Image (spheres, rainbow, N blue to C red):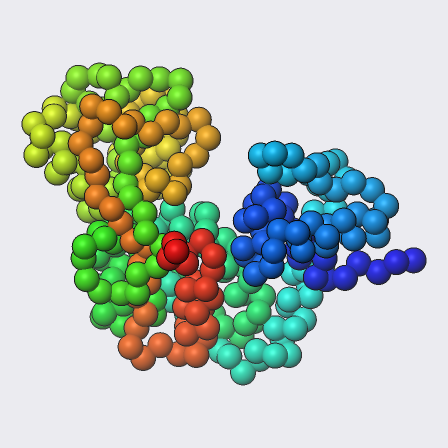
Length: 285
């Protein structure tokens, strides 16, 4: 019976996650052609088609969906075993503060890998919509690191990937045409909300707060329902939403920014390094 190499399963899992050979190649630091060759080899080992490749990406076949669940189980067990031997001396609390736009998207695979690779570290994650508040907790020694979104022209922290705020509406509704403009926003103190309100005030554009939530999921649900226009980073645009490019003022550019406490322990430094090196957070060339 043939054996399934862990490397091939990891390539398959990341490709299934990104549904794009180029994106998977970037994460694995290989060429797209090398990724394609590994996937072909895996398909030959299981003797079935796992992915359908197309001009706009790839999609899983039913067999691929079945293998993906098994692959995740094997990879998690593999990483847990290695982590228990190689990183057993890396321990201590790691207190991370971040916005849920990161915690529910980009950070999921990073934190999963960290927990498996450093089983003795105690990860604690705090989500909050106020970046300055999270930074203050790092400065006060109440958090060990914070991954937040900061204005591009501000100071402090390690600047990672650049981005910009954009107005978004539902593809099925025209909330942007109402007067006054209805907004779906976080509670007070959110950088997105503050930036939008300031921009509207400076251009004398009438607006009202139509929906308030403490979570990104709540805000996006309101946008999809046509309750109001949302304000999000361009990189987090989701299906069913349209960027409003006309009739509204320009919003500021931003940076994904990492703040690390001065006396961070080794476990915290390892997580900070993993975040810095993740392809999604690397500055664009």
